[in-house]
Image (cartoon, rainbow, N blue to C red; front, top):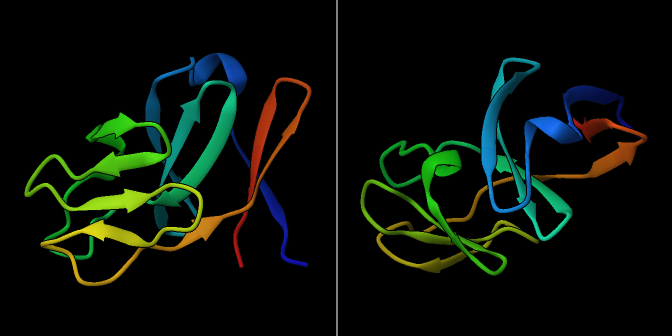
Length: 103
């Protein structure tokens, strides 16, 4: 099992919002969807758009630059122009701390 890194507090990410954090040299987008937290790579594989700034609809996020859509639960691409998904990271909430597992 890889180490867990504290990346935020629950107050930092109210429901319906996302933030970008740097962890182990990676930009990670952290989303709060109705009290469930998801962490994925922040960079869209199509052209590097910041997914943490994208529109969220249910468990999907749309890249703000060119409209590629990704599933927050598994990182799979749901809509082009991206042709590959993004990495997802296991999230654990411990009290008010949010931790992610970075392999």
